[in-house]
Amino acid sequence: MSIQLNNVSYTYMARTPFEKQAIKNINLEIKKGEFVAIIGHTGSGKSTLVQHLNGLLKPTNGSITIDEIVLGKKDEKSKLARKKVGMVFQYPEHQLFEETIYADIAFGPKNLGLGKKEIDKRVRRAMNFVNLDYDMYKERSPFQLSGGQMRRVAIAGVVALQPDYLVLDEPAAGLDPCGRDAIFNKIVELHKKTGIAVILVSHNMDDVAKMASRLIVMKSGEVAVDGKPADVFKETETLVNTGLDIPQIISLMRALEKRGLPVNTDVLTINQAVDSILSALRGKNHAK
Image (cartoon, rainbow, N blue to C red; front, side):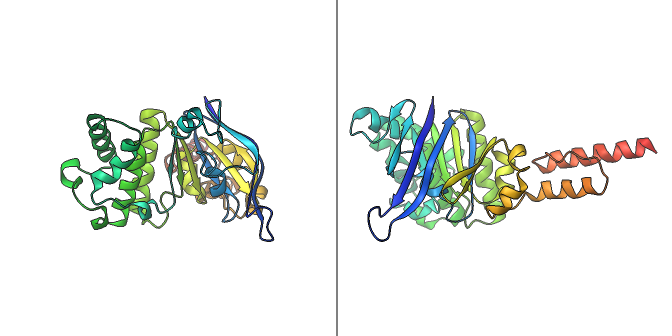
């Protein structure tokens, strides 16, 4: 089971003097259970790409299938397929509109036609997942919350839909470091606990290095690189040409290697870097 994009292109304002091709000839498969990060500079086409994944945009050319069902047809199968993909937009708190937190999170499940008992269960579970106490917050207005809390309510609303694929477009944009860490930790936790496929849009290499098992680098509407993080980060020239920086931790390890310390330059987290540096230092001391 997977989402497949087959030679997908999209042009804004097609057949007008203002037409602009945003993505072109995209061929991708994103399988259930994957944690994929789509990265690229502003204007690279990454947001346009993910808006095709649940039918928000229809390709100018090409086709998209979700679990072998072709999107775009006006039938029940296509409608059900789109519901398999949950979308969290950039600044999702701007989409909050109900009077209470409960009502906002329950909006999606209600539209799925679920009964009250199941809706209550999903809302409670989603609020618990994003660390919002159900009894304390359910009747509060979402507009009384902090920016980070509002972001969590918006994410809870999508989690309550229980999608098979979760698309997040810059979910930590505008948050302080603590807020960013809280959001990303929850996304990783959800992925590990449920096996949900995560498609994360970002321009921050340090963020995606710690989380994703696969990176797709976009440039000028096309896929420039697609692979495992360690392999993608070796494509230094390509990344620089796309306007992206190598994660700081990898830059540090490469600098240490150049100075003669035999460290692993494929590390992706601080803990991995610490272990590699300590191991290299022990080896040097042992050799003396």
